[in-house]
Image (tube, rainbow over all chains, first blue to last red; front, side, top):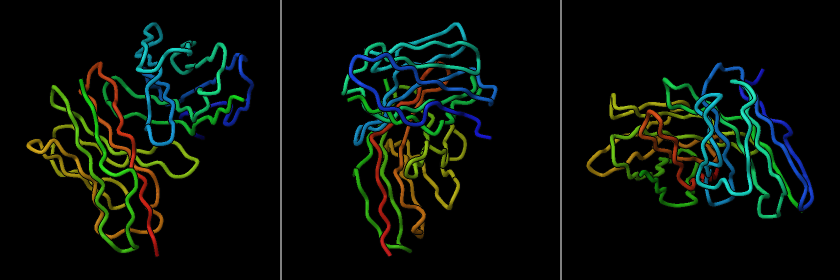
Length: 112
Length: 113
C-alpha cells in the first residue's frame, strides 16, 4: 500500500465550481504540504502544516484553502475554480526530525 | 532566503554517456540539499540528499552528487546513462528546522539509444 495517497487522481471541473483534493498518509509524519506543478515552473508551495494546529501559507496560496483534519489527513480546496488553476497537484509529508519529503502520486486537475 | 537554479531545462545524452545535471543554490545559512526524480505520470522520488556530512553523496540507481560550498553547487552525475534514467530531475534546498523546501524548475533528461 502507498504511504501517501491522493484522491482523486484525475478531475475535470468547470469554472466557478468548488473542488476538494484529499491527501492521506500512513507514514506517521507530522508535517504535510501541498504543491502545484506547472510545466517549466517546477513545484510551487501552496500551503503547509507542521502539525494539526499549524497551517501556513506558501508562495502561491491565493485562491486556495486547506484543512488539516487529523495528523494523517490534509485537504486542499479551490473555492471557485478558474482555468489557470489547471495543474498537477502534489501532497507531500515529512517528519520534524528529517527534512526529506515524501510525495503522493499527484492529482491532475483540469478546469474548463 | 533560499533559491535554486538548475541550468538547462533539457539535457540530452546517449545511452552509456556521462550524465551531468547542474544545480546552484543560494542560502543564507548552511543548506540541506536534495535531488528528486519524477518519472512520467508519477510523484517525486528521492534520489539523494546532503545534510552536512560527507560532501560526496551517493544515491539510488548509480547517481551521486558533490556539495561544493565555494561554488554553491550540488551537481548530479552518473557515469553511464541508461534508457530508464529518462525522467525529470529536481534539485531542492532547505535550511532545515522550520524552513520549507525550495525547488528548482527541473531538468528533463533525455536518453537516446
